[in-house]
Image (cartoon, rainbow, N blue to C red; front, side, top):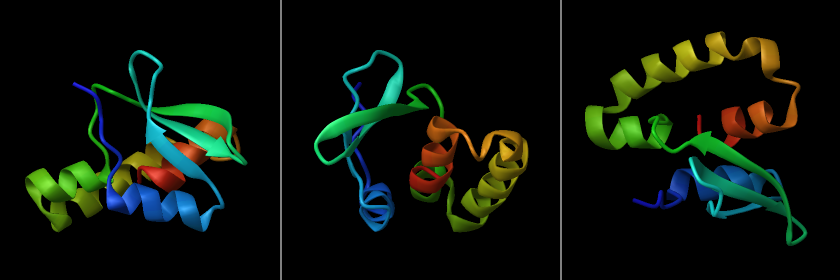
Length: 90
């Protein structure tokens, strides 16, 4: 099943001056574009993200998962794909 970008992720991407759409890369959720040029594919298709957790388990659970995700990925926050995932999906 193809991941559909959420309004949350679209808004976050737009605030960064980016556009997103469902990924054409196998195993990824989103393709990220700057000036109509693809700059990255982000998000593992088999994993949940902040908006998915809000929808399925509620905001309190999603906030806890977000906190844990950000702690777990703090080491890579300056790398492009990691930064985009943290900003757009979480």
